[in-house]
Each structure stands twice: as C-alpha cells, then as structure tokens.
Image 1: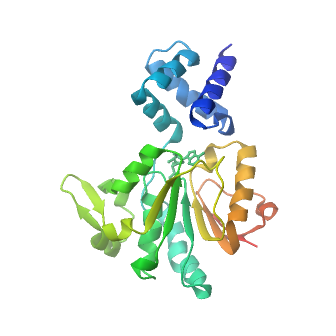
Image 2: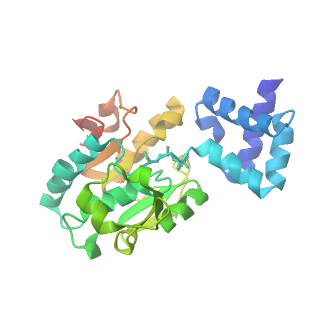
Length: 259
Ligand SMILES: C[S@@+](CC[C@H](N)C(=O)[O-])C[C@H]1O[C@@H](n2cnc3c(N)ncnc32)[C@H](O)[C@@H]1O
C-alpha cells in the first residue's frame, strides 16, 4: 500500500515538474520525503502531493529537500590543486580558450571556484564557465553570489582578498569580475541534451544519488560531451569502476580523461 502511494507520488511529481524521482536511489529519497511529509502531518503521499501542488512554499521546500544543495568553495581542496596545477596548464597547452562546465552547480561555489582558478591563467574576458542545476532557487542564489564565511574557508588567501568583500554580517559577496565569467542555466542532467566539445566537466556530489542505470546513462552522455583529451571531474565518493566502458581512462584520483 505504502509502496503504491510513493510510486503514484513519483508519477505525479514527474508530470508536474519533469523530475523523474525513479532515477534517484529510492531508499534515501523515500526516507527524506517521508520525513518531510510527516513533519507537515500528511497521512500519505497523495495528500502530500496535493499540498505541494497547491502551495508554492511547500513545493519549494520539497524541491529543496530532494535536491540537497550543500556545497562550498574548493570542496575537497587537494583535488582542486590538481585542477589548478596540472589540468588547466595542460589543457592550455593546446588551446587558448577553454570550454568548462559545472554540472549540478548548486548555489555556485563550484563554477565560481573554476573561474577563480582560471583567473590565475587567463584574462577575465576569456573565461566562461557554464553552470547548470535542476533547482532554480539554487541558481537564483548562485547569481546573487553572497556566501557565508564558512563556505570560503578553503579559498586561497590571495583569491579571497581579491575577489570577496565582507558585507559585515559574516557574509561575503563575490566580485562582479568573477560573476561575469559564469553563465547559469536551469538543466535536468537526466533528461536534457548536453552541449559538446567541453575541455573540462565537473559533476560532483550528485551522481551518488542516482540509480546505477541513471549513472551509466549519464557517464555515456558526459563522455560524448567531452572533446578527446577532455577531463571529467567527479566527487570524492563517486569513483567510476569501469571507466574504459565510457571511453575514459583514469587521469588522477577522481579525474577521468576522454580517450
Ligand atoms: C550536493 S549539490 C552538489 C554541488 C556541487 N557540485 C558540489 O559538489 O559542491 C547537488 C546538486 O545537484 C542538483 N541536482 C539534483 N538532481 C539533478 C538533476 N537531475 N539535474 C541537475 N542537477 C541536479 C541539486 O539541485 C543540487 O544543487
């Protein structure tokens, strides 16, 4: 009975939003959404769906809970050292402009980290990072570019001094120079088409939530979206176990190069 109820909920969510919850690992998703439903006292998922369908605040909260927007600048800082000291210099040997994408960018910390790193190598006018996420609220926050001091802890001191201004309340505003380098767009990784010929794609800390089938499909899509020699950067729990089946070879820990 309960199973049927959640299946119906997933179906209705898909019709309303285009978000296919069946492509996310079910136990975690069902647990998170059951907790949310119970918090509001709805007896089943049908009643909960009717509520989110009618009330924008409840809908936003649902989206917020299902997407999980946690992020920070230079998340897993030693991996970003690889981007800064090895990948970008190597990519720049063969071209002067790089095509870079932060897929599932959440509130912007990851694409802005890319732009901060690139600012060490290229004139600002040459830097363009595509940043996409399924969650419009996260994108709106990313565009504002205001962050808690906590999420800036791993930003190298020189970049912090140059590109962040304190707003006096424990919050920091990122510079317009960096903001201008990032183009934000709403996109569902599991459904929408991808651009091609990327040099570097970061897709971190989202694939972990997807089913094996969805993961497999996504790795193929990323592989086709990269140019030969391009790099896929994944999260620190998201190692790919059979990279060659997607025409990748391991480049460094959590980095894969398109063959
Ligand atoms: C934990 S955040 C990761 C942020 C950043 N990549 C990082 O590693 O810090 C996960 C993000 O994935 C997004 N997301 C979830 N499902 C998605 C989908 N199907 N397509 C695009 N983005 C999705 C969520 O909205 C959320 O912002």
